[in-house]
Image 1 (cartoon, helix red, strand yellow):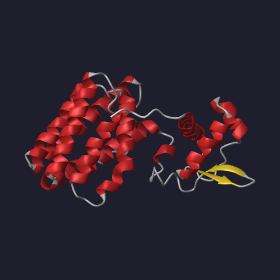
Image 2 (cartoon, one colour):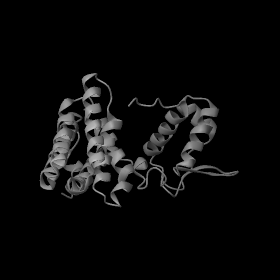
Image 3 (tube, helix red, strand yellow):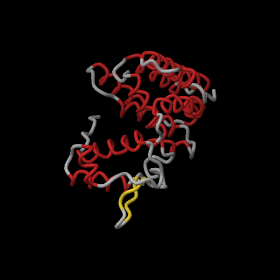
Image 4 (tube, rainbow, N blue to C red):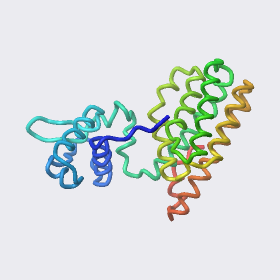
Amino acid sequence: MAEREQTLSEKAADRIIENIRERGLGPGDKIGTEMELTDALGVSRSTVREAIRLLVSRNVLESRHGSGTYVSEKKGVADDPLGLNLLHDQVKLAWDLLEVRYLLEPQLAYAAALNATDEQLAELKEICDQMDSLSASGQKRLDVDIRFHMAVLEASRNLVASNLYPILEKAVEMFIHYTQREYEPESVATHRDILEALIHRDPDWAKDMMRMHLELNRQLLRHAALKNGEDLNSLKGGRIC
């Protein structure tokens, strides 16, 4: 599946979020005038306006008539229910998101082995095939990686799990961003290990394979942190598993 190219306004919206994080702004803080943002981002005023409208629609920003634009009290509830995009320490966030995945996904894989339909298993196989193809041709596979994990969540038939999409999407996105491992084949192989366990409808095997996949991710994240000179003890300070 081809990755959609971001528009100028979407890119500007991402940079506004980055600016909010860098300045340490919180809910209720004013982000600056359109002219200030135009100068800071190096884009046209119309692009800034469209970016602001986009962030307002996502509940990241709030426009107050005659006053200006502020960081929303809703913290991006629409697409980012926990306000993760606005957290300042994004490196620590990447680690903590992986820890949360470790708590949830092995058990959901266990349930998926018991509850997945034949159609869902066929979809997971198709996703793995797409991963192989993208990896072999050196193309990004972020979207299909996320699709695989969402398909496992859906196959678990847990009514709450399907609502975890924004958290899972952010977790996978940040893991790939900090490890730069999107093209590596070993990740595809561990996804296929999970799929094999699901096809055999062996819940313990599925749980173990998901755990091993996340352990690999944890090790890769650890290597990335060491390479960047980050304090591992600080990053793992909130470890819960």
